[in-house]
Structure formats: structure tokens, C-alpha cells
Image (cartoon, rainbow, N blue to C red; front, top):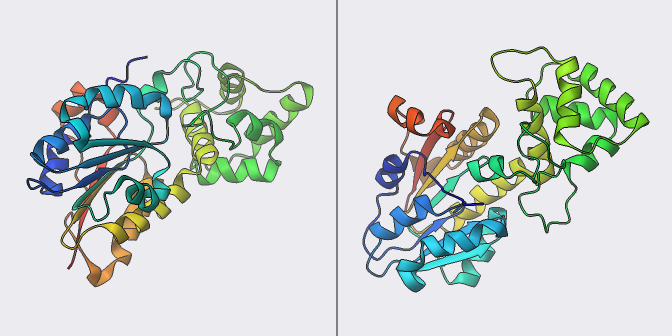
Length: 292
């Protein structure tokens, strides 16, 4: 499947990173390379960019897209929670710019066999890296204690009352394992009322966050990224839901005098951008500058 990465808030990313020729940069969520391509153009002729992604299936196309930049584009598979280790191995020790574009990519939602989308039929997997030994969404749905399922749905899915849904899932899994997205959606639709958004949206978000330990990775990644950021360097973070944005906002505030927050309020996409790229509609951009 083609990645076809359309970068969100691209102009704002370039503006807040304030890139200069020959600086080094890290795109901690390189995906299909849309942001990375623009960053590399702005740090020419000698600046290096390290692009990191958890999903190895994306990286071949990313390398192809960035191939015109030669060895200035370095692509690595890994979890951005380990950004400092990955950067050291790549020789990008103190970058002047770091970007995090959080959330699930359109590529993952469109991947028929990965289970990220509740539309269609797929195994309940949801791992960003299929080679990871972490548990799958299927394992959580079928084996997690009811109290743990309730916590996941309420904390990560921001579902007000998850008990009825959990009770139905537990009843179903006693009869037979719940293995596919369609089977899970069928249960959700029987229990949760339809609203402005499909009731499965938040449940799938919650499972994806739990499977990939996303919130823990964000907290660890932001801390490590700021540590390796060069003095006067800038970090830009794009979040896509309130749980992510809350972590980013809290982390930036915790930096105190070590940093200058560049965005008093988060930047959001314009109406034309949302029309052109509906995936961008919930994006929020925050930026910070490290004080020397």
C-alpha cells in the first residue's frame, strides 16, 4: 500500500522550527516523509535529518521519497521513546530542530489487515510494528480483567461509563474469542448509542493506545528529545486528541526557565487545509524553544 503522506500544518511546522542552512534535525514520526522532505529542503546544503518510525513497512517508501537528499536523510525504525539512543547511533547528537507528529496515520487506518480502523474486517492487531512482542488488541479484549478493560476504555477512550460495554464483551468472549474488528464493532453498536461520531471511534482509540503504550512513549520521548535538543533549538509537537495534547502542554509547562513556550495557544488547521486533508481536522500544534 502506498503511504501517500500529506503533512499536517506544514507551513506552521517550518515556521516554528525556524530552520537554518546546515542545521541537523529529527523527525521523530517520519511516516511517509512529508514533513521530513520540507525540513531537508530548509536545512540544505549540508544539514542532516534523522527520521524515526515504529512501523518498518512504511520505511521503504519513505527512503525512496527522501532518496534525492542522499546521505543527508537517515531513516531508522524504532520507538521515539528511545530517541536519544537512536539519535546517538545515527550520529545526530544535538539537533537544532525536533518534530513529533503524533496520532495514527492515514496509512495505518487504510491498512486492511492491521485492525486500526473499525470500518471493514481485519484481525484485532493494532500494533504499529507487527514484529513487536507486545500484546495485540485481540489479546486485551479476550484476556484482560474486566476492571482493566474498564480502565482502558474510560482513561484512554474517555468513555464516561464503560461497564455495560465491558460486561457485554466478557459475556461474548466466554462463548467464543473476539478476533476481528467487525466482531468487536458489532458488540459496541449493540451497547453504545450512536452520536455525532461512531461509538467505536473512542474504543478503537483506547485499544490502540493501550497496545502501543502510546502515552508512556510520548512522555518518555518528549523528555529525551528536549535533553538532546541543542541550545536555542526548537521542538514542535502536533497532537490529535486531548490525551496527547494534555501531556504536551503539561511537559512544556514543566520546563520552566529552561525553555520558552512559543505557542500561547495551540495552532490548528485552517478551513481550507481541513477540506483538503480531513485527517488534519483535530490537529493541534505546540512549539517550544530551549534556552541556552
